[in-house]
Length: 263
Image (cartoon, rainbow, N blue to C red; front, side, top):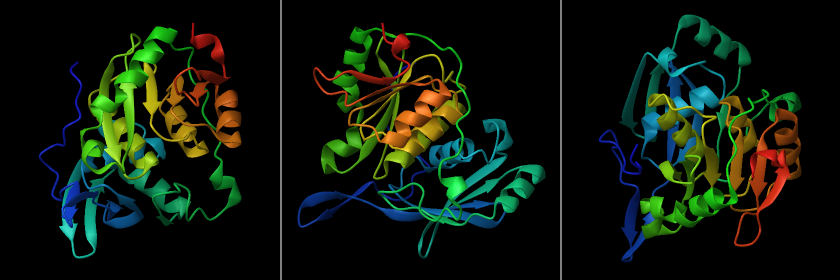
């Protein structure tokens, strides 16, 4: 499959604006509304929002598959953008029981969590998955920037990319929030019915615990972060059976958990 980084035609707000002749990233409140009830508001880059809504729904366990998202409509409102999502009644009932009303911010994907037990959810163990070579890892890291067209103009966005086992970036998504970029990529992959265990994930940000949580929820077996991980991220990756490679700059290929998949 060819690399896909362009925004779909459903985008209704530009990804950047001009201020004093300089392009800066657009950041707007995006509300995810399930069956008519607002569940979460995230500060996000207003592109690839259908992917974002689907990916968030999957990585947060609101739905179990893309097929359970029965309708999805992106619409502007006075204060930002709403994404109206229709899910099955039983999923909506479970969502209401969680009684969460999160307010996301650029730097934190856990803001608004009401209980400590919700902050570090147990990660589902991942499958055996495939192995990759160091050459494939180097190739993916070397070419990830080529798949960040939005960031090339504003220098303020994170990216999440999906690489095949030979290190070719096949799909990427960008956002001002690192966890939003990952959710967008998850949604894009799920919409295309791609196998989350057949390849590896590359992110431009540090690897914090919510990145491991989201990746493990979808069965990602190898997660590569350009910057260093946090202690909770390493611990969760270890318990989930996920290979976590971080601080992955030139000459710094550090496998913090389950290094057997890097050969």
